[in-house]
Length: 110
Image (cartoon, rainbow, N blue to C red; front, side, top):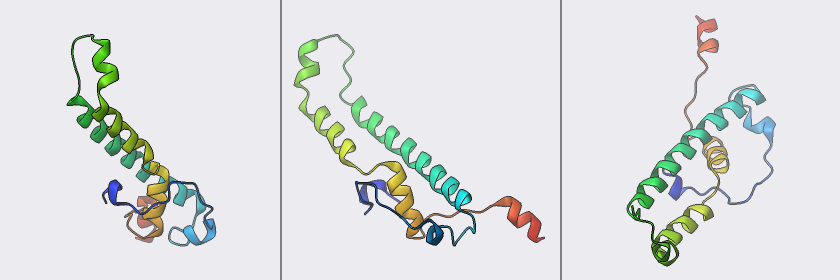
């Protein structure tokens, strides 16, 4: 899922952990799933931001260019306004868009 098109809230909201953990049957496993997805989103966001900021990279030390580059500032502000990766991951999990499996549970079923 594209994190830019997410409908996740930008502020932290209270969630019912018992309802969230119905799928896994364990609150801690749910937190691990959401945490791992948040790490994936965070890495993706960081790579996208670095790729966009690389276009503005200058290899000479000119202080005037650092303060005058408005496009770079706007890109940074855009990424700052996006919801945090944990909020995006929690929303994806609530919406059922996160695929997860526990190999230990599958092994015990056989």
